[in-house]
Length: 352
Image (tube, rainbow, N blue to C red; front, top):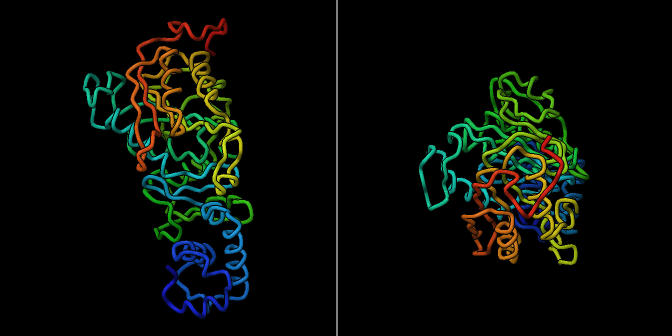
């Protein structure tokens, strides 16, 4: 399927254009040109840029890496070469959290055998380990308006992207360029590898404070609700969380991946089954207590192995959620054990 208007002329001007879908072409055109314009009306500079982006797409580079953003759940997130592109499969994790911890549920309620008594549903504390773009944490905090959250990543460059997404999306439902309002704030350009983009949004209240807010504290800012910490899993954290979510690097280094994933940072992809155990050990070692709900995204062949691992560490009420393709994608686990009650991990180092 191609762009319907003037397709023949477009093909003459851009020889590679027929190899792209209409959706891809429109996304590239909108990225280069602000507002509606026909291809034949583009300037020479714009034409050269469009042709360059088309060539990049034909090398296998994902569209999100080229235009610098990707839709996920209900929002559009900035993504760069330093972050894993948000994927539709990961929306299964958001659905699993909402099913296990419905926003309308209060302590003592039960749904699907998963909901347990935890702190008020209006004030969850959520931890996102390996936050990347921040898409999981930010999406959940939009679903739980009174919750607070911390996003953790070992990469300072990924954290910069996550913080920028939080700034852009805080108090707003979309981040689509060209939104009009009484005032606007320009988020600093984010490198997308070969391109830079600016996200224009209506200015939030006290936007300067959001833009300059420190992200070094381990406690969430109650005003912004978001905080981002550089840490190797839980190493630089303390305290306790009601919900922990994590999309870890679960691909085995020997496993083949699709071409598009080669443009994602290897640190966000490769780790294998051992990554889950490292995270469970980190939770027990550094946090004051375990979360009441723990959610992992998993590879579609890893459900049995991760379930066995969680059981060994004392987690129960384990449930596997499938993605839209019917493949195992998310594991939810519940535990009543506090730290120190787990025989699988014993450390003399107290939580910080």
